[in-house]
Length: 487
Image 1 (spheres, helix red, strand yellow):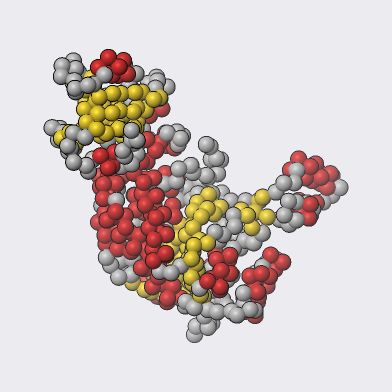
Image 2: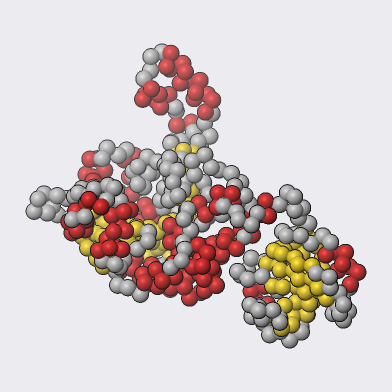
C-alpha cells in the first residue's frame, strides 16, 4: 500500500481504515505493555503516533514480527508501518495508528547519530547540514522556503508575467562591483608558472593578468558566475513586456557575516512601460502578497517560529502586510536621520549609503511602518539607473528605490532603467566600463527602446525575515560562504 503523508492522516477521519505510514522515528517510549512511537515524514510540523498494546494487540497484528522490529527502532531510524487510523485519547492529537505490521527500513546507530543532543546549536546543525532538515526548526524552514517559491511564481503568473531563466555563466557584471566568481578551463598551474617567469623578468604584479590569453579559454573571453539576471531580463522585457527571473546568483564578496551568502537565489521582475512609481506600486503589492501567503498558508510553521525562534514575528508580518508603505525621498530621509546622528554608529549625511541601522530607525522609530526610500545619489547606485535632473544644489540623483521593513531594513531594491542610448553610454564611459561585454545591452536602447523598470528580491533575505532565523545560512539547505563549501 502506498504511504499516506502524515499531514493528510492528521486531518483524516479516524474511522479505523487501514493506512500505511512511512517516516523517521522521533521518539520511542516502551513501557511494560504499551509502546508509543512518534514518526515524522517532513510533510508537516507534527508527527503521528504509532501504538502497540502487548496485552491487547490489534486483530490480525503480526505480533512476533512487530516485537522483533521494535528492538531495531531508535531515534532517526526509518520505518514503514501499517495499521488502523483511530481516535487518539492523548492530548494534542486527534488520531493515531494502531500497529498491524512494522518494518525498520534503515537502522540508526545511536552512538554515531549526530542529532542525539537535546540542545543543538545552529552552528552544530550547520556542520551537519545533511541531516538538519530532520529537526523541527529546519523542517519548518525548508517547508516555508518551498511555499514562498510557490507564492512568487503564483504572484507573477496571476499578473501576466512570463517566467524566464537567466544564464548562470556570463561575461558581464550587472552590478559593476567586480565580485564575480571566475569560470575557466585554463590551467591555473600553467598561469602560475608564467606569472613566476614574468615576475622574474620585472613584470609588475598589477600587470600579471596580461599573461593570461583568454582567447584560449572555453568561452574565448573572461567569464564568471552571474551576480544578477537583471540585464538579461531587460532584453526579454523589451519583447515580452513583463518577465521575471528566479534562480541562483553568486557574489565573490569576502563578507563572513550572518547577512551574506556567496550563492543565493534572486527573484528579479522587469517590466516594460513601467516608470519608477509603477515599480514601487508592484513592490508593495508583492511584499504584502508574500507575507500574507506565509501567514495564511503556513499557520503551524509560523506558530513554531513565533514560539521557538522569534517571539513577535507574526505580529510584525501582519503589521507590514496590513500597513500602507510610506514613501519618502532619499534627501528627506537623510534630513530626518541627521536629527538623530548621535544615536548611530555610522553618522549619515547626504551622499552616503544608508546603513541597516538607518533603515531600521526610519521604519521602527520615525514612521513605524514600511518605508520606500527613492531618488538616491547617483554615485551610490548602479550604472543602469535613470538619472533625474540636478536639484537646486547641483546634486544628481537616480530613480532608484529601496523598500525598508521593520526588523530587517532593506527587503527589495529597484529602479527605473536608463532607456536613452547616449545617456547610458555616457555613464558607462564615465565609470570606465569595458563596453565590449555590453554592446548587446546598449542595443536595447537603439532598437525600439522603451521606459522600463524592475527590482530584485533576495530570496534568503525574505525567508530570514519570515522565519525569524538569525543567520541567513540557516534558510538555505547548503550555505556557501567564505571557506564554506561543504556537502
